[in-house]
Amino acid sequence: MRRVITFLRRIYRLSLNRSKQEALVLKDLEKLHTKAEWRFGLYKSEKYLETIFSLSENKLESFFYQVTDGYFHCRVKVLEDFPVELTTEIFILAAHFNNLLKNGVVKINTNNQYVEYTQKFDVFLPLLYKDLIYHLMMSHYDTSKDVYWAFQRLINENEAPAIIIADLLKKIEEEEQKDKTTT
Image (cartoon, rainbow, N blue to C red):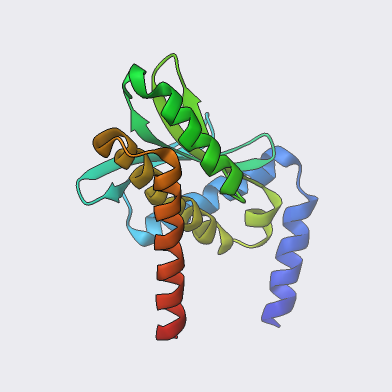
């Protein structure tokens, strides 16, 4: 019986126009944050939610989740006020990430000198599967931490972008091997 109700709920959600679908996804996003007891701000007229998560031990950052134009957008600044003299290396590191990432894009704003990591997903995924919102957010969050780590290494240690990416890939591979042995 529960499957039938879930199926009918999904059919109903699909039958709505796009703005109502987006409103439902935003409402589901709000419910998730409320249930998890995360502090957040909801801006209904702009169709986005802002919350703060930790990118590293000492770095909190605002994460933005927006539901608009038929997409569920996730966005976070991973680097603010970067040194102008490192612009070329920042572009190279961003290009390496963009070649590796399956979902998401590392964007550079040269006017305001910041780097952000964004992902966008078709709104139908979280519309049909409410639980997927959490997984999409965590996918964005986990990758954001890696992108942040890489750009901090570039800025603080002046490491070459290729070395940073090689070390990151090695770190990810070691974590995957560790996960396989524990399961």
